Image 1 (spheres, rainbow, N blue to C red):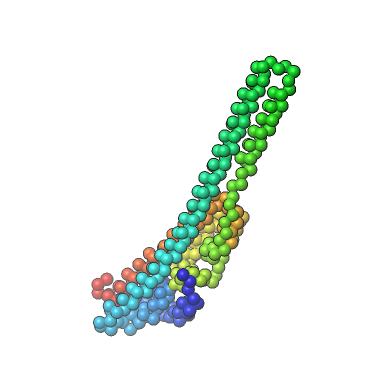
Image 2: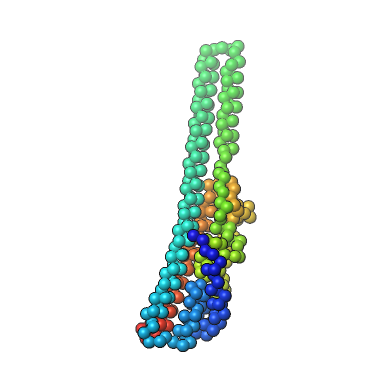
Length: 271
């Protein structure tokens, strides 16, 4: 699913009302109202009050906006989860193939060593003192074992993976919203006003990624269009996607908080 630029036009008007709302409600509630395009409704509740009989209609509108954003959240999280599963499956496949090749080469080296030993022993038992064949056989067998051992060490342990549409890169590098990211989710994900520390969910995640990836080379691959991945790097990609999914899931908790705050404003006597 992709979202056009018209989906985020509401932010301009919502931001104008922001300062007025902060006199009545906390910043987390205001930021979620901006994301949901409910600042006008929230401003009306806190400044003018609700006309008798309009409570249910207003609550229904709020619930509709909350439900829409929640569906967008889970749709995005499902897409991220698919990418995570894909990375895990490819990593498992590559590891299985490597183990199979290593096992075959190891067996070949053992069999070669056994055949050379038996063959040399038979020749020596025949008491062919003037025959150099046992020595040649031993040398050939030794070289074969060395070759097989080096082949194990030089196995190609990477696989080419292309991901031109890379959500890790878009989150890490992009200041503008990717087309597949819901505007409400992207706004709140980048909001620095949802907590007292002034750190957005995105900034928390990026700091974790920078700590998690010890080298610039590994991070460059993970936020690129693709490249040669080892099983460990595929697992790192999977873990980063899992962290992204978990970070986005935190918005659901803030949605519930917003809903409880608005309900308290709509039905003050019941709260």
